[in-house]
Length: 374
Image (tube, rainbow, N blue to C red; front, side, top):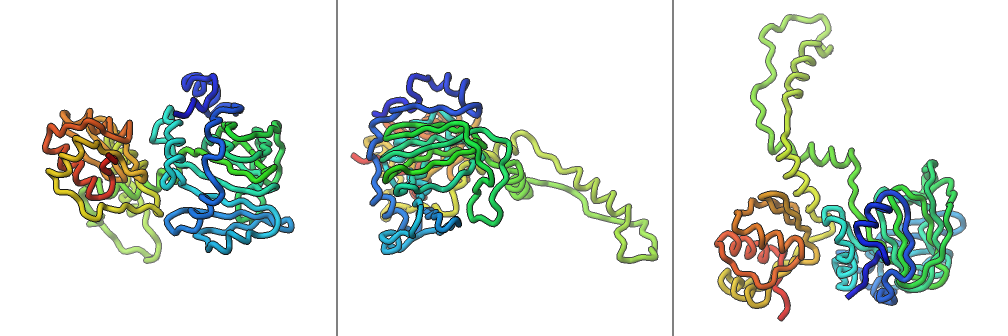
């Protein structure tokens, strides 16, 4: 079992003192992480079309960005100059990465995003930048130099394919080795440069921008609206300029739009569906020969079930949300459903309700849940 990634700090102490407030450096936070991932694993993932990967290079003073999937020969012959290979969502494909992500479950799953792995030779990095979300940076292999600090000037290099800071004025300069952790709050400028062949793990968190959230909500809302009436103008009179939009029309349409309302329950449902919606690159693989309901229930009782590594599951009140879908959970099934969401597995399950048995079986047939190995 992995030790605490926070060193001597408890999760409560970390959240109170550091979370979204100030950085934290913990030497030897997870010594067992040393060499947990290999460069060959990253290369193999970067060649797959179901994995999001990028290669960043800095050649002759210019930044370049390539997106995967990559051909194997392209990764065997990397570009000249400084470069880094980045693999997003490693927790979906590597058991070790998934286990690592769950070491940070003192942060709600609604905020946890994924594990990114990066490999770089000496001098490699992605340039000075800032993230709009919290990030834990864990060194897996080799050594890396991190410079970082809070700064007000967050202007970016014009026309660069990456968000590179135009001016970088770090206040801290540290060197990290395998097992070391560095936590950075949002919008902290930082730059990491590999000193040796280097693998770094980044645990990122979701923090949707207000504009992004509003856009998604306004796309979701029309299905829930029940507005009556239609524009009408029984007192219309001729106007000298037919192309002019009349003030009465604008006023009536303003009143119609002002009648749009939503309740807390609408926001709760939207948030659950939005935060569990799988990324565009993710698809689920149903079992090739799914078991019938009775056989599935029997196997689940003896073996237990678990969420697919790709599944996102949350709950609130009587609702459970899984991969962008919502169900109303009967009272007698809520303990089991919440246990599955919190622990990502359900062992010793006893299907005391037909609803629970059928719902879990539907999720199994969709590839959302799996039977545990014997």
